[in-house]
Image (cartoon, rainbow over all chains, first blue to last red):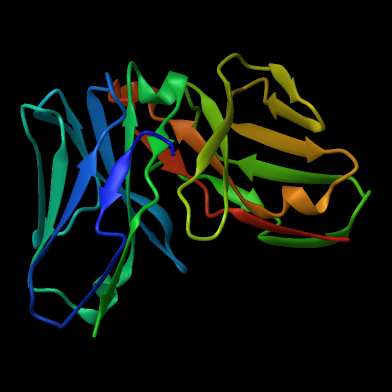
Length: 114
Length: 113
């Protein structure tokens, strides 16, 4: 157990639907990062939150949104889902500067859009 | 846009062989990290290097950060089946002060007994 909890582990949904992925960071970590991993794109940075505020944005589609709550858990909302959104979605957390001290990743949510 | 290119993409070797994985970029990174990922799991941090020319050893794994902080290598001595997995390098986007990491595409290593 890495200390980062992601739910659900698997999700199968139809095109056009909306889903919410949840992440609880490691205890004490203030930063949460969301990444999408697909076979052809590798790990792509989506968005980062630090202590409830958005800190950095990557290649996140307008159909996707995220937030971090006062208890530091984070949710990634994916709407109007398309077949191409099928991927592994990872949440990671870090204490200080993630680029220096490294990330702790969750086990991911495997999203399949049919 | 900062990019990290890893080579080779795939590597299949026999137990006991040595190997090196490379991670290259035209951009300077504030730090370079290596992760290992197994199927169905998230990446796990192996090491962080922050100083140009830095070398770190973790048992049979040796990590090096290039002098110009644009590249890195991972060398495994006497590979074992337990080393099988996806190896990812990740560069710290120091210019943005966000802690964001940019990942390479990964190197899939298979070590046969």
